[in-house]
Length: 375
Ligand SMILES: NC(=O)c1ccc[n+]([C@@H]2O[C@H](COP(=O)([O-])OP(=O)(O)OC[C@H]3O[C@@H](n4cnc5c(N)ncnc54)[C@H](O)[C@@H]3O)[C@@H](O)[C@H]2O)c1
Image (cartoon, rainbow, N blue to C red):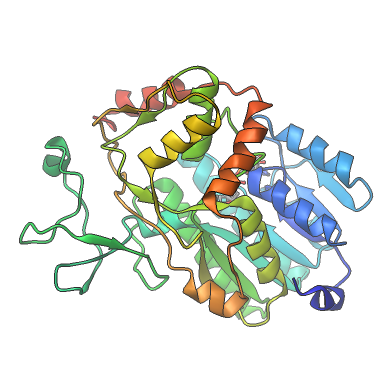
């Protein structure tokens, strides 16, 4: 960690929007432990996040200020931005209107405030979801992108991607140069957020970095929210004596990155002079299949008798494989993930055993199936 660099940074606090959420809380804790001051801006709209705020307040009441407002409240935000040295953008929400409003309009309002109160740095929490399907190689070893599975293929349970000759494509680590495939309202709003931050940052000389986060997991992840990461969903199932519910055949590959590594990446991005203007993948450097992850979690929670339910069902718009190539972040930020999955999952499982999680899987799947989005 560049402690000497830290002292060179402005002594004003770091403002984190969506700061009481999973990633915001872990980032705030890291910054506060290193001596920075933090302003958390959050309307506590996500169920359960007030616990995060209490947890942080108990640990660091002196240098932490919590502002419980909506990010679209320009007056409240304007006042806080004026006090900040750097800003992390991290709110997210569900439903078309709300997503677009919170992510796009919320970011636009924040950037508008920055024009009057320029900060030293801006770091945006972007997402791997903007890639859609990850990058692939064909039988000749050439890169392939922009291919998707069609409905007929999925109905026949042909889960893997194929080239025009019907030959299976091999998934490869996805680089930042892969063109986005924006397949959901969320992905579209995250891309808009990322581009808007980089564009305004460049135009107004605010060094800005967008971190494309892969599947983040760790303590303080919401367990009662049916739309959050797959690990939290599996955990809520196990803790309620239900087996995890797995789409397709469970062999889809993802990149699970510890929230500690993500918080470290944010801090590096807040300090780095070389990263300005760039979008960087932040993953673990490793890919894992969903079924293997579910089995591992079952063992750690002593629930191995609950065999994961491999359903053969699929969700429209789901991707098969996506995991990150993190070379650029290594090179530009000096980012090196330090938490191996087994270690991170152990920490998560220990924390989970002390939590009460509400299993809301049915609540999450019902609206999808009623709109014909699952088969
Ligand atoms: N968790 C992941 O795996 C992941 C992966 C890629 C990108 N991201 C991005 O990282 C960021 C943080 O994600 P997270 O997992 O911590 O989410 P989270 O849902 O735990 O936290 C989001 C926080 O934003 C707050 N919020 C929502 N709407 C708000 C509004 N209008 N005004 C003020 N606060 C508001 C919520 O109360 C919550 O505390 C998001 O931008 C998300 O898109 C997360």
